[in-house]
Length: 377
Image (cartoon, helix red, strand yellow):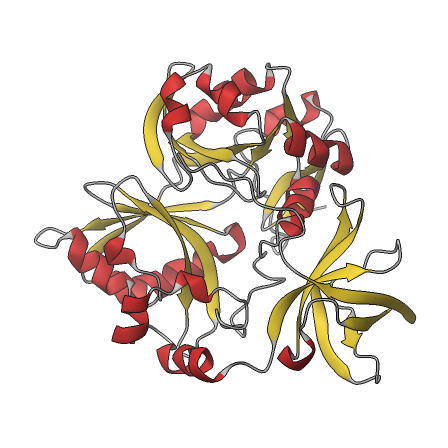
C-alpha cells in the first residue's frame, strides 16, 4: 500500500539514537518524536531537584537576526520592539531576556528567550510556534534584518543543583556565569554557547552547539553519575511547580501579558513609549485591571486537577478554568494553574473544579509552588 502523503512524519532530534540506549518512552510533540520519560517522570523530576537532569530541547527554534548592510543592531532592536513590549534596546551583549511577541489585540503570539552579541540577536522560540513567529517577525523586520532559522544549531539543557559542578568539570569558567548571562566555552573540545537559565526553577544551563556535536556533548554529560536523562513529563511537572507558563496551555493569542501576570516583562520605557503591537489593550489593562488573572491552584484531595477543568466559587458561580495541572512530586501533592475572575483570586480562596462529571475541592495558592533557585553571581 502506498504511504499516505497527508501523514506528516515526525522529525527526530540529533539525540534520537540515545533514546533507545536509555530506555525512552517516546511521544509526538510539536511535530517531533521526543522522550516522554526514561526512568519514570517522578524519579527524573526528583533527580533534577536534587542533582542534575539532562533535557533534549533541540526541537526548539533558534533564529538569528543580523542587521542588513547599512543597518545597525539599534535599528533591528527598534524594529523588533514593534512586536514585543520587551526592552530589546536595553539588552547588553551576553545577557538573556525573557520576552513576549504580541499581536495587535495584545495577545501573546509566543514567549521566547532573546540574547545578543556584537553582531546579532538570537531568539529561542517554542517549536510549535516557530513558523508562526517567523511570519510575525518577517513582517516587522524584513527591511532591516536578515532572519536566519539556524537549523544547523541545537540546544540541550542541564538543570539542577549539581549542574554547575558537573559542567565546570568541562570548563571551570562556566561557574562564573550569573542567571540570564551567556558565554562561549569549549565543552569536551566542542565550541558551545552556554547560558545560565532554564525552565525548571532550578539553577541550570542551556547549551547551544552545532547539531552534529550534540550527541558527543550529551554523552559526556550522561557519563557523569550525577546526571539523569529526563523527558517531557518531568520538564512539565518541574515548570508547573515553578509556576512557569507553557505556551498553548497557559499562554495563547487570546491571552495578554497582564492577564498572564507577566507585566514584569514590560519595562517602564516601553510603557511610556507605547509603540508595540497591542499596546493600547495592554496599557489599559495595566491601568484599569483585567477580567481574569493567572493563579496557582492546589487540590484539597489527592486527585490531580487537569487542564480544562472548570472552576466554580462556593456559590456555584463559574469563575474560571484550569490551564495546566498534574502531580507535583516535590510538593507531594497535586498542583495546577488557571485563569479566574480577579475578585476571587485571593490566596486561600476556596473553589470547586468540575471535570469528568466529578468535583474537586481546591484553593488559590501563591505561585510558585516551589521557590526558584536561580544563581546570581
